[in-house]
Length: 447
Image 1 (spheres, rainbow, N blue to C red):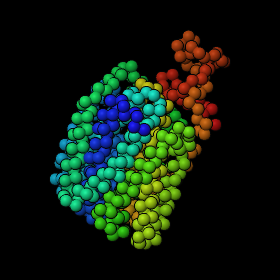
Image 2 (cartoon, helix red, strand yellow; image 1 turned 135 degrees about the vertical axis):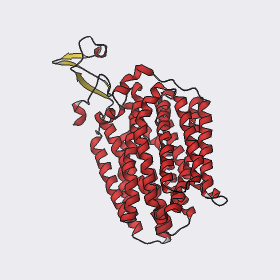
Image 3 (cartoon, rainbow, N blue to C red; image 1 turned 45 degrees about the horizontal axis):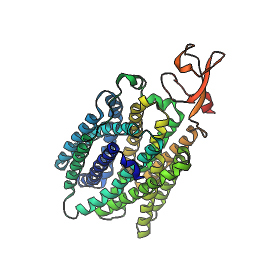
Image 4 (cartoon, one colour; image 1 turned 135 degrees about the horizontal axis):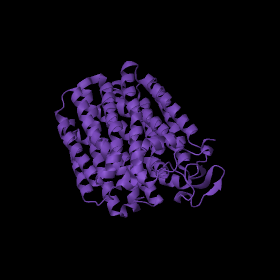
C-alpha cells in the first residue's frame, strides 16, 4: 500500500492530510467536552446543532469550491483554507457561550469545505493509474481512521496533564503544518475555460442523471445515520448512560476508528477481486443491523458486558461505514469526465454532508426529547431505508461502456466518428458519462 508514497507530490499532500486530521481529531474531543461543560446533559443537543451548522457550511460552500478550484491555483485554495482554520482554532479556547461555539464551527468548517473537495479533485490528476488511485483512496480512508483512533488516545494522554482547552492549540498546529507541506508541492494548474462544462452543468446534475451516483448518495445517507449516533451521542451515552469518566469517551471513539481502520486496510485486496457495488452495498446493509444492536444494548443495562458490546457495535459501524464509502472516489472517477472531476467531487462533498445535516440534529435533539434507545431505533430505520434504496438504484451489471443513440448531433460531428447510422440518429458504445454530448442515462441502464 505504501508504494504509492514514492510520488513526491502525493506523499507531501498525504502528510498534510494526516497532520491536519490529527489536529481536527483533537478538536473533536475538545468540542465534545466543551459542549458538556456548557450544557451538561443537553450536550447532545448542542453538539447536534453545532454539527448541523458544520453541515450547512459544507453544503453551501463546497459547490463554490468546485468553481474556485478551476480559476484559482489549487495550492492557494488549500493553504488559504488551512490558515483560516488555524486562526479559528486559536480562538476556540476563549469560547464561553453556546452561540460562540456555533459561530466558530461555521467559520472553521467553511474553510474545510473549500479545502477537502479541492484536495480530493487533485489526487486523480497526480495518480492517473487506477491501481495507484485505489491505493490512495484507501490510504486517505486509513488517515481518517488513524485520526479517529490516534487522536482520542492522544487527547486522553494530554487530558491527564492539561485542560481540554489546550487541545485546540494542537488543532492550530496541525493546520499550520498542513499549510507548510502544501506550500512545498507543485500542483496541477486549474484547467480554465477548457472545463467550462463542469461549471455550466453542475456536479449535482451528474448525480441526478447517473444511477450509480444516486446510489452513492443513498449510501452517504446510510452512513450519516449511523455515524451521527456515534459523533453526536457518544459523549452523553458514555457520561450519562454508563456513568463513565471523560477518558471513556476517547475509548469509544477509538473503537469506532479501529473498526474503520481495519476495513480500510482490507479494501485494496477486496476491490482487486470484487466490484465497488459488491463491497459497498453489503457494508451499507450492515449499518442498520448494528444500530438495532445498539437499541438492544441500551435496553440491557449498564454492566460491563453492555459496555463491551457497545464498543463492538461502534467498531462495526466504523468498519461498515468505511467499506461503504471509501470506494466512492472510484465510483466518481468512472462517472465523470476528467474536466468535470472537480465539480463532481464538490457535489459529492456537498450532497453527502447534506445527509449529515439531516442526521446530526436528529441524533442530538431526539436523544434529548425521546431518549437514546429511540434515537438509535430512528436512525436505524433511516439507515435501513437508505441502504435498500441504494440497492435498488444501483444497476446490478452496471457496465462502464454503454450502447446509446445520438439524435441531436449532426452527421460528421467528431463524436460520431465510430458511430453507425440508425433510423433517427447514430448509435455507438463507449465509456458513458454525463457531459456535453450525453445529457441523460441510456434506457437499458434502468431495466
